[in-house]
Image 1 (cartoon, chains in turn brown, blue):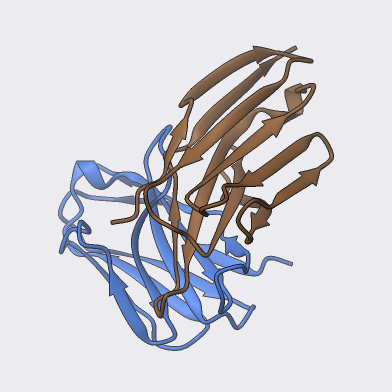
Image 2 (cartoon, rainbow over the protein chains, first blue to last red):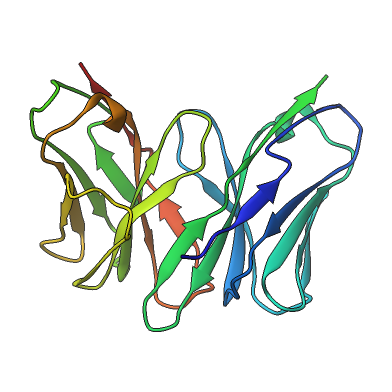
Length: 112
Length: 113
């Protein structure tokens, strides 16, 4: 079983602060995706990282894939209330059986 | 236009009464997933299809079954819903290859009374 542990599970910070969310596993993934989910809606993809060590930026969000492709991080600079939501990492495997497994989730609240 | 459509958005069923949730897609994706998501938790994979190949997660209860009659449609059947099965059920699709995006429906919120 491929397990993805996210930390922290809950995070509440003031607007303007920086934060980092971690996604760790003992399994190797062919790619890792980050999603954001609003209440009552399905998750929406933010980014996909494929290459070990890869760094991708999406405005104030920076995503990094670990060198060994077992972990990833999401860093948000100058957090805004609109960043509030459930952040999910998801590991994809394509070893003959396509499968997307979600991490445990990080619920982020940005206080105005 | 919605690409992954789940029906209904809200479903109320009686304890023990079989219920079917449906999902359709217009993306022609090979892979379709069913996830169960309980309040404040991450989605939990129940099973997924790679084309017609069905892959059941080891810890998915036998009470949950699925059918995929064609590429576009996938169904989740709960044979005897219990109170613990109340949750949001999410359907998703993705193309072939591990670096493709998964597209989610809006989910069906199941209530068991």
